[in-house]
Image (tube, rainbow, N blue to C red):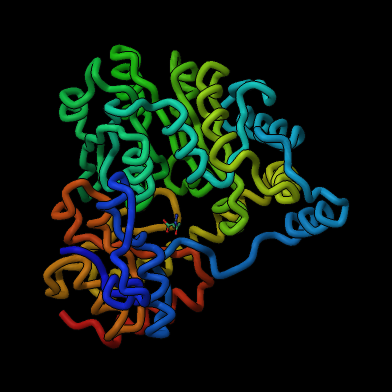
Length: 402
Ligand code: GLN
C-alpha cells in the first residue's frame, strides 16, 4: 500500500529530471491532505477529507485584520509575537488552565501550530534523541522529527475507544526518552486523553525526566468531556511546551497563527528555532488574533453547539450508510471502519469513494509507523455546512453497497 494516485505522481513530472530530496524527507509522500483535496477537485467530489471549514471566520476578526492592514501593520512583526497578542494568549491560557504565564518570556507566536511543532522539535531535540508519538498521529509530527534527526517510537491507540495502553507506554518510556508529543483532542480519532491517562503520562514523564510537547489545536471542540492541558498537572508546566492556534477555533485555517507556551528555559530553544525558520509571523493577522482570543464566552459556546449539530448529522448519516462509527469526543473528525464495504484497505476504499461515489475521506494508514495498523480506518470531517454533510451522506447511501 503506498499512496493515492494524483497528478503529483513522478510520472507526470515535466522536466524528466529525477526528483531530488534530502534523505531526511525521502520516505514522505505528498501530504495526504494535499493528495485528497486535489482528487476532490479532479473528480468534483464533496470534500470531507482535509479539515478546513467551507464557511468563513467571524466578521469581527476579519474586520480587525483589515483595520490592521489599513493602520500600516505591514512590516515585520516582533519575532516572538506582537506584544498584545502575547498578552491575549497568556490571558486565554489562564482562563483555560488557571496557569499564569509571562507573555514576554513564556509565549512565542508562530506561523500556525505546525510551525510551533517544528520550532519546538528543531529547537529542543538533538539528532538521535528518542521521541514517543501516539499513533495514529498527525502527519507533520513524523516528518518534523525526521528533519530533526530524532529516533521516533510510537504507541498505538486502538479502536473502539483509542485508550492509551498504559503497560505498553510504561515499557516504551525510559531514561533514553527525550520527549513525547501528544495531541488532545486527537486528530484523526476524536479521542480525548482522560485525566487518568494524563496523570499516568505525567508521573512517568517526571520519573524519567521526559519533556512533553502538546498539540491542543482542537481544545475548543471538546464535546463529551473536559479538555485538560497536561501543563496544568502538578510538576508538568516546567517540562511542557503547550501548542495551539487560531485556525480551528475561529474557522480561519489559512491565517496560520499559532503559538507555543513554555517556561523560559524551554521557550529559549523554541524561539531560537522560530527565529531562524520564519523569523516572525504575518503582522496584521496577529492584531486580529488578539481580538479573536478576547471573544465573549458566547462565541465559544456557539461554536461548540454548531459543531455538535454537524457531528450528529454526520455520525447518524455514516451509521445509516452502514459504517461502524467510532465515538469522537472532540475535534471535527470522526473515524469509521470501512471494511463492511469489502475493499482491501483504507487507500483502496478512499480511491473508490472519490471516484465512484464522489466523496473524499482521509485514509488513516499514513498516520502510523506501521501502515497496516490503519488499513481498516478512514477519517471524515464535519467542518462543513450542514447541506454539504447531508449531500455527502446521500451520495454514500445511494452508491455504497455492502
Ligand atoms: N489539519 C488538517 C487536517 O487534519 C490538515 C492541514 C493540512 O492540510 N496540512 O485535515
